[in-house]
Amino acid sequence: MRIALFGYGKMGKMIEEIAQKRGHEIVAKVDVGAEDIDYASMDVAIDFSTPDSAFENITGCFEHGVPVICGTTGWLDQYNEAVDLCNANKSAFIYASNFSLGVNIFFELNAHLAKMMSKLNKYKVSMEEIHHTQKLDAPSGTAITLAEGIINNTAYTSWQLEASGEKIIPITSKREGMVPGTHSICYESSVDSIEIKHTAHNREGFALGAVIAAEWIQGKTGVFSMKDVLNLS
Ligand SMILES: NC(=O)C1=CN([C@@H]2O[C@H](COP(=O)(O)OP(=O)(O)OC[C@H]3O[C@@H](n4cnc5c(N)ncnc54)[C@H](OP(=O)(O)O)[C@@H]3O)[C@@H](O)[C@H]2O)C=CC1
Ligand SMILES: O=C(O)C1=N[C@H](C(=O)O)C[C@H](O)C1
Image (cartoon, rainbow, N blue to C red; front, top):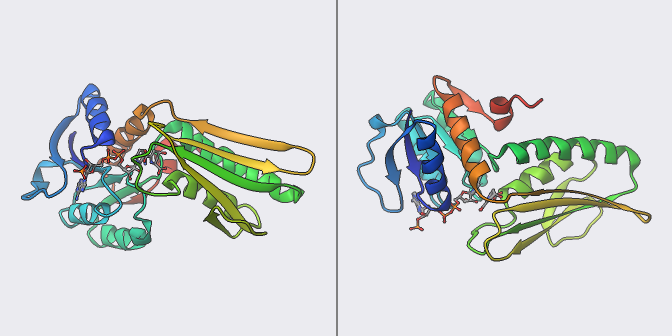
């Protein structure tokens, strides 16, 4: 498979390593200020760039019929527009706030736990995410997906950074050293607490998931998710 990397930072470099080990070719590394992008050379584009550049990168690919795997977070106010452009151009698209298998299992666990908790009505939920100090967005995309999983299964209606309120999920974002990504969800009652936590030890899991998604999307048209790729539920 001929892969173009949009964003050649920490994730772009890790994806290159894993893709090459799986026998793929990196045909382009598109970083800031790139000109004359050769879309015809690509079977798929993998975008791990920045919140400000992802939308333009993605939609440029759609206009040239190149399928896109996007892991960039912090641009989702334009997600619906990207979906429309993908469909209009009969291209293919997967966005995931987190491509690791472990986190996608954690998403399922989170939704199941939320469902059980909503029946008890005795616990208050809160969330914490910890990432490296270079991260541009807060809360993390993964924390937002986790919050949506809780909102879809309970009486909670929204999330907010450092908030309090009856139906608001409070999220605490910490930025420390080189932390690749840690997410925990805590349910607290007057008598006990229950916590679930995912800790990434490095970036390999994110990168492998993105390459597997790129392999999976070949020959497909439409908008998909990691649930489709991993066949988890
Ligand atoms: N979904 C997932 O599983 C994961 C998602 N992420 C997300 O992926 C994104 C990238 O993360 P990471 O690799 O750690 O970040 P980095 O900052 O290490 O890399 C981002 C790269 O994008 C480049 N860039 C800037 N502007 C453009 C542009 N217009 N077009 C293409 N590239 C550009 C940057 O260049 P320069 O430095 O010169 O500005 C940099 O090289 C983040 O949004 C992060 O949250 C991260 C890990 C996992
Ligand atoms: O910026 C990162 O590093 C990460 N970003 C993603 C997010 O915002 O959830 C995924 C992972 O946690 C690492």
